[in-house]
Amino acid sequence: MLSEWIELSLESTAPTSRGGKLPGGTYTLHAAGVLELTPTECRSEAHACVLSAGIHGNETAPIELLGECLARLEAGLLALGAPVLMILGNPEAMRRAERYVNTNLNRLFRRDLDESGMEPDRARLLMRAVDDFFSRYPEHERLHYDLHTAIRDSRYPRFAVEPFAETATRHEQWRWLAAADIQAVLHQHQHSWTFSHYSKHHHQAQAFTLELGRALPFGHNDLAPLAPMARLLEALLEGRKPSGDTPERMRFFRVAHELMRHSEDFRLCFADDTPNFTEFAPGTQLAEDAEAGSFVVESEPLSVVFPNAAVELGARAALLARPAPAPTDPG
Ligand SMILES: [Zn+2]
Image 1 (cartoon, rainbow, N blue to C red):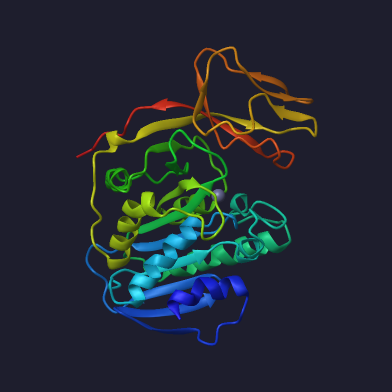
Image 2 (cartoon, rainbow, N blue to C red):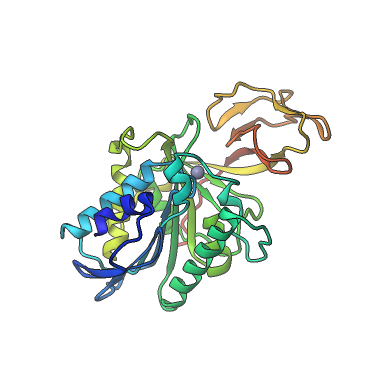
């Protein structure tokens, strides 16, 4: 059953079984694309883990990565040692192989959400699932990795976005991400209503959005570069302490500015296929908006991340970032 969970979620077939046994514990299907794994015994290093993928339906590599973890669990190659909530974010968009159906799900994770429609309903269901899951494990350190792939090339194909929230990121997280071959980290500078932000802001979880290469269709992903990330996920599933490496292996950036689209008449002044983290020198014009005017890089260079001129009005068309120092170990 476990290894078929992803196919079942894609086929919209109501599963005959709502739960069952697996090596080291049990599983419960709470809703389409919401699977909880409960260990018979938690190991002492166990975190309460939320692992999500498919928040954007066409980002398939992380879905395959979670599928591999489940297959290894079911085959007895891994023994469950931590509570885990696995989530396929937007099954309807996954079925259509599209980023979303009506609107970008990854901006809707706010408790005062008053929008209606498929994606807002899905966001409410997922927020409830996360609330219920973390409330069952009040004693455990909380963790949420929301796994994505990017729609463009990147100077750093694998990078972490650290949501802005009060909870401090523990130093060990940087060490784990470095060992998982994450190449860069982008610190957010203000609240942004993503899924990983939700868990960090409302549940004090150690939380990241992880970008794991380019978005490609099912069956076209090369999972080899993600093997170190798979090792990290497996350690979390087993409740073991993951391996670490020096955070200085990664490049750190902090968001300096958000480029917003204000009008229909809006364009970005660089090529459509510009890779993430491309740096622009002072004096370069980056955007032209009929309402907001032009945006020009001022005194220091800016690196562009997630540019997308086709976003909805009032949404973010790009993040602009500057290098930041690697975090030091507080000891
Ligand atoms: Zn995504």
